[in-house]
Image (tube, rainbow, N blue to C red):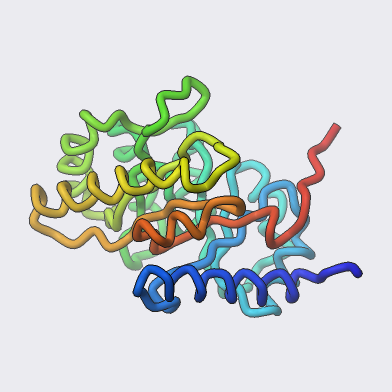
Length: 234
């Protein structure tokens, strides 16, 4: 029996609620971000019509190619992939939130680009932290996180809301939990150091989001379990 995006979304909300209950938390604390990279605009619209309001894309250019077909859709659009400095202005124009900030020069470029947009709320950003030691992954090093966060707070057009991580892929989600716990500890220490709230922890994907919720995730980024297997261009 084929499942629809609406069916998958219902199942995901049930799993999120169950994981939150096990952790003694409320499901309302957790935002589901549908990772729509490589999936067409029609699937995004279908998910929106099924009740989803947050979507994540990895590449600026890919999202620009879908954006016109989704014009006017009142959703929140997250950039969750690595952002190159030379695309900062395009990203600031195209996305509601940038969840993968990892560099001071990049932060400055996003801030300057945000100044060219109509006056509005500051652009929400998350700092991506590199936790797994993998050369293929981006993110700021743990030791450089406090200094970067302090600098980002100086930028009036950016709102630092929290942290994000992409830990190593491990088959057993329980083996990933220490990475999620580490990000939470880093966030808590940063809150104390900065003397301000950092409510967002974006961590956990299709195969491990329940473990992330156990460790305090407030946003989980789910692609395959929602949209199905990705079809990459040849």
